[in-house]
Length: 576
Image 1 (cartoon, rainbow, N blue to C red):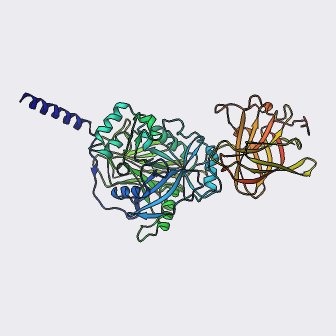
Image 2: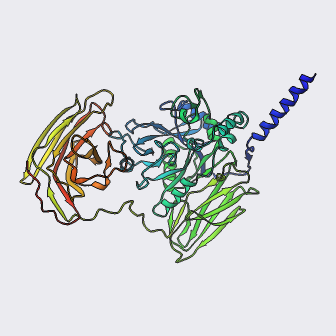
């Protein structure tokens, strides 16, 4: 009898503790929906890379969560042709790609198959995605894992993730993670959302970038439907085994993107639906809703001006009336209007507004909504809109232009040689154009097989101090097919240190200027300064960063000159 009572007491204590640990239940909201708004998931992995499920399984999970679209972002280099848009279980699947760079990951949506592998420095991948017509998004920009965090905030990317679900839990304690494992069994979506805080750093970066140029903000699920021993999540979770959690369905019930289309999806074809969706994403007509707090809901940010009514992502001239409207009207909700990242107006909703007066100066407006008892410290926003840009000047270039060169001189016209990885086939051809200019053609074929450091290069030897006082190289280049070439500077052979800058070349001869300050170290730690006076070799390198093993081609360089902007240099370069 006593044992029975003791068991009842223990059971009651355990149930009470579990009830105390449970996160608040999601509030289910009622109301009509706008047919122009479709909800979906962005940044989802399948078993084509490091996810657990097939695209069809992802679609079924999305349908169960009442989502209309999923953007699949399996890892790759862009060379695989994306699957065409298709509708599975009523869900539009769009095939995108997550590309690894030396400074973080970049998602490309609407990217055709690329003529060469995309990779290398972030600025180069951003440039390639934009040139090829894709929409690029910085993934998990402030991940606690250094190798995943974004490091090039000067690159002109299109969008960034202000929230990434796979990063949100990485800074939690083991105790918090253990609590989540327990409560996940009863309230899975709410338990995942309980790991979210307001991502102060990411939101501050987004706001700061917005004062310089237009940047779209998205929330990324980074869904793999597994965590633990298999894959990169193992180190952070500490689990020696794989858990199929959070499942795709749970991830999709935790939060969603609301995309405002130009017209409702009716009897849509996959291609037309995908085109509409991508157009809205590019325009910035998108908001985030943490559905595990309450939903379905939306926040609508608009501005009315003499030019008309404006939606998120638009530029407009003031004066203007900026308004944030919460739907549906939820008791206890707080709506905030932010100007340049600072709260400028707040109220209980369902609508708040403010005036942007003539002569007030440029400003960036966006809106957030909060509910009591939201998880996180500080609490994660329930709803987040994209921004409106009032009286903003044209986008400023991310870097100041290189000052004009005050002097230049030809690089050595003789002594050029080839360097190559064993197994690669390389030949160097030359043609004299003028007494001061020779055109050099590198005919190359990289060794086949898996990527193992294959390369082919033409090297330009320099006399001592040849680059003293210089700050750039100038040359013309072309190739028989689109490709990226690594322009490198190397200090004496014994140290083997190199600095590089990648350039894009194709069949059209083009003029190039490579500034030394734009070059990054290869072997040395990031930020290691380049002492140009010690450089003894210029190289033009084809390697597996942007070239597949076993491929072949031709690269031509002519009119190579050394130049600078710090006064004339009278020392002549040897013509060895």
